[in-house]
Image 1 (cartoon, rainbow, N blue to C red):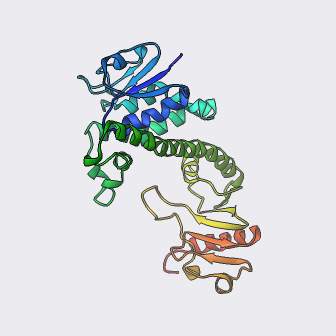
Image 2 (cartoon, helix red, strand yellow):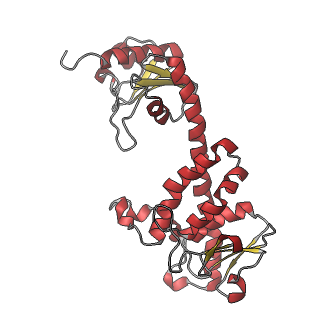
Image 3 (spheres, rainbow, N blue to C red):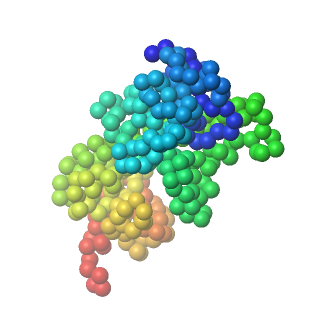
Length: 311
């Protein structure tokens, strides 16, 4: 495919064509971005991909617009923006080009679509209001933030709009690449944590080789007996609780109340473990200077957590 031009509309920009440009410029780095509504540019041709303009969606002809009637819809009935159309068609190639292993491509593609692409699609189509993010966050959704990079109303010129688009592109790229990096890492962590869960057996303490996401692997394994996680951390060792869900700070078990907020000698005295260094006042993490010390603290935390309430 000899793509020389990536064509989107001129004038003010939105998150969907900006994020689409992130995907396309990685796949076609030699191509030039053309921002135009001129018929000669938005007419399908073998040397271009046209997106967020053109009034048709025809992947075979390289046109990915969503403004026509009927609007292109997902199987779920939710509307696509140009970003969703581009991601659906080109996303897997983008992931392979980003170094995501072949056996993880479909999983990362689906996860990125669900938690990054779909919200952009819905907001761009007016299918959801930014206020659903809450009064404190409605102005901090990614589409709203990216649109803050546009020129203000009394500074708009054709050249200024194009320059602002070019300046916003690396910002958008950082968000896309960062999210994909984390999704790919989550899959690697899941595999490592799953192996560690098997090795832990019936122990309520899970030891990991480094800090990493672990809750999803614990839930997938049905390891309801696990209460705490330990791992090395920047020269010391950490002891963590296991949160009950993404939207809560509640844990399966808290660290002992007597440790809360203590450091160094005070914490050593409270727990009786030489090398104990810190316990957060919210009792979700503690730190020690060695593996043996953190494992002993974990054992004590388990004992305290298993004592019936009121005893």
